[in-house]
Amino acid sequence: MRILLLTHAFNGLAQRLYVELRRDGHTLSVELDIHDQVSEDAVALFDPDVVIAPFLKRAIPATIWQRRLCLVVHPGPPGDRGPAALDWAILRGVPIWGVSVLQAQDGFDCGPVWAYADFPMRYASKSSLYRRETTAGAVVAVRAAIARLIAGAGPLPVADVRSLAGPLQGWQPALSQAQRAIDWASDGSDDVVRKIRAADGFPGVEHTLLGRVFRMFDATAVLPLPPDAWATQSRRRSAAPGAILGHGGNAQDPAGLCLATRDGAVWIGHLQPMDSAAPAFKQPALAALGPLADGLDCIAAASPEADAAPVDIRYDESGPIGLLSFDFHNGALGSAQCRRLRAAYARARARPTRVIVLMGGSDFWCNGMHLHAIESAASAGAASWENINAIDDLALDILSTDTHLTMAAIGGNAAAGGVFLALATDHVLARNGVVLNPHYRNMGNLFGSEYWTYLLPRRVGAPQAEALMAERLPMGAAEALAMGLIDAVEGPDDASYFDGVFRHAGILADAVSFAHELARKRARRAYDEQLRPLSAYREAELERMHRNFFGFDPSYHVARHRFVHRAPAAWTPLHLASHRRAGYARPSPAAPG
Image (cartoon, rainbow, N blue to C red; front, side, top):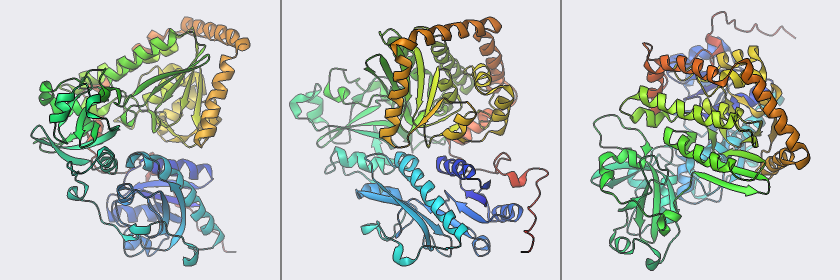
């Protein structure tokens, strides 16, 4: 079928549908929902069999849905309506939720149901539930709806539609900050975390800290502790719920701020200033506080509060296999995080193991440079330069490892430098369902580094490498496997994925084959180095990156600013909107009979 994706932004859900539906053999084009006339023109140019809306912030114009079948993906089960489906579901603690595919008509989320899928509500943030369960359910439901359309079956009969909405049946309005507000006198740690997680990603929950108004994100509860268990006992007893007990280290530390609650404490990882004269955006908590953080105490590592702080880098061992996880917020890898990860990797290399598995994070494996941290720096160019060199140093450590075999286990989406960090390992495995974006140009024609000019051609060949970087399109694990970009796919469920990770790592660690494979790795690296040293690849890449950061073309800085400040799209890029490319011809009508 010919399918037009009409979407507010080409987000993770839209990308996953794009990848999966193309794999199913459908012809797709994308139009970002900017203006009614623009959307109408897209429909006229592409002439789709169906318009699918995976992520919208306003209604599809009647001039489109009255003439063309339009199916809307709603992140709630049949019966739920409104723009804050997941927010309400998390706040009210529903055990089962779902995603529906509805036909667009007059009124929001009230059209006939074509398909739906259920999922259990994991204890997680809204953004995590959206990226994983909602997105996976949307793929199932959209495929089911398309199958009904192809079969000429139409929407589901009303009698076949089972609602999980329960108390959320009907219209649920957007939540105001007053409705999201924390009652620090009565809300316990779990209540505080649930409210912040219901607003995670956007819009956050407002709270006044040190006389300034912020929106809070990225919350983790400290288990309730008896008063005599706190190292900062006197401060804990005197701190009012909502007050800052201390911080976890420095402005880049993921532990952020520790706030008192009536029954314990919570860690807040990110804040967005709301009373700033300049446009504000989400930042690591201490960076957002700025000079206000100077008077705060660093909680000692021996205290229960710090012991319960979230950890973003973790190392575990299973026999001859070392597993290094790095779960950075939104997959962003800043300069300080690079340095800490390099130190953790060095410790892993010093261990008497045979294989090091880079596990990445659960929602994102890694997305490369920390654009928010760069945007907040005094010099964005200097911060960008520091960040890319820090990632290059980490990639070089991985590429230069001659004591172990290395493996990347990509369990969450990855993009840009994060993809090439994975390709620096000897063996790359991806979870079925992840979306990879192995390119940079969407961020203002950024050239990229992380030794990609060495890593990508040796994996897929020079012509395919050039095409991948030029097309700038997302791909799934199956497509990456078919072209040789990765070596294996496992999953999609947790059990089969982790079984696959350990099975592949175990094969690499096998005592009989390990010595042979390590010797072959050393020989290939020595041969490649003789042909062209890694330093030459890095030098050439960074020369182009230096132009991006400090040259006359501001495209990278403009694109980064728009990304960080969540600026709405002004046009649809031509690599997505095939119907707007030069030379595009509308399909001819089918011949009679």
